[in-house]
Amino acid sequence: MLDLRSDEAHRLRKALIKDPVAEKALAFSLLSDPSRYRVLKALALHPELCVSDLTELLNMTMPAVSHHLRLLKDADVVECWRDGQMICYRLAKTPIAAFVRRALARSLEPA
Image (cartoon, rainbow, N blue to C red; front, top):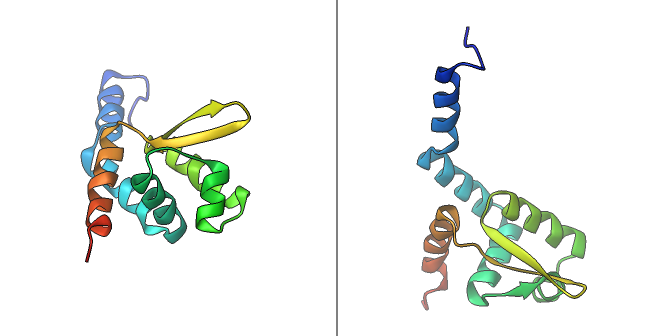
């Protein structure tokens, strides 16, 4: 049995957190939802959008947009800031966000 306070457990935990394959799997799972994909595509096309902009552009409810943005923020794909009463979002400058950008790039190219 593994002692969760041991150095071995610490190394294992660190390896699991920093696993690039797991990070890519997370990115694919985030992209696999059609609504989240649309949110990400909107942010890729316009670098900064507020929640109200996204609800209008995507014809989605505010709770739905907020839910998807929270998942994306928790995964370090987007970052947010407050501008008065509005909360605005953009794609983050993290490795997982860069991977998402590359995945979206194909869909943004003209046919």
